[in-house]
Amino acid sequence: MSFVRQVGMLFARKWIGGVTVPDVIGQARKSNDSGEKVIINYLGEDYFDRSKIKQTIATYSKLLSQMKDEGIEGDIAVKPTQLGLSISYKLFLSNYLRIVKLAGRSHRFVWMDMEDHMFVDDSIRAYLAALGKHGNVGICIQAKLMRSLWDIKRIIKSGGKVRLVKGAYPARKGISYFGKADVDRNYIRCMEYLFKNSKEFMLATHDDKMIELALKLKKKSKSVVLFGMLKGIRGSLARKLALAGERMYIYIPFGPEWLEYSIRRLKELEHSTLIIRSIISD
Image (tube, rainbow, N blue to C red):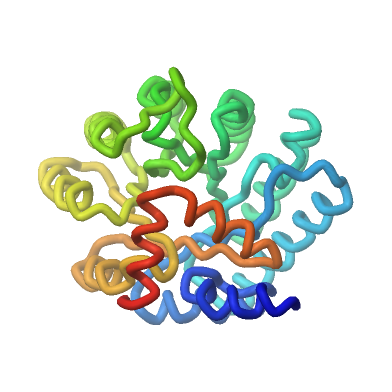
């Protein structure tokens, strides 16, 4: 490991679950011990190298096996382009269904992470195809995208399960909201729809305002509401919610591509502020 990566890991290890499967299993155990379940993601995206895609599938297979053996409470998350979507939809769908089946054997849930806007249609298409055959799947939707409420309506009407985030990918004119206020308004619109129309969903946010509103709406709703946060970001709040009886999940990314992930998060203003705060506080 180069000196730059060694120094970078000293800072990144707070929000990264390590490089190997045993590393992340250890971190997941700590979250479980705090009353939190986990969502584990093996880092990597935009793959054109088929050998890297095969290695990714093998890693998820090993991860699922270790989670079962160690009794880890939680699920996994995959990215479409780490499973071949940058090459072809057919390859991606085949690999995605393979992982969903593997996860199903050990009674694990598979979240599909959402990437850049250009992949949204094929990601939802594959998700709905899997949903028709398997019940252990959910999909992430980004409030940053203007289309997201329409996508959520379509997914919920199909019986799907949504994890709502604000979004960390670059904004595009005419496609994304740019200002925080506009993204927040869309997050609230999507959240309110989920409370009225979805039996179960996840709100992944570190925003006090969104969490406070969600807790108020939850009192009047019959929906099952899950909360999600990134590892190392607002950990004390996550533990507080878990202790209060809320269903809290910690998203733990791991793998050798941790530096690329960290750089992308730092480029997104809201995440960069949270990450910088997390370095000096819990």
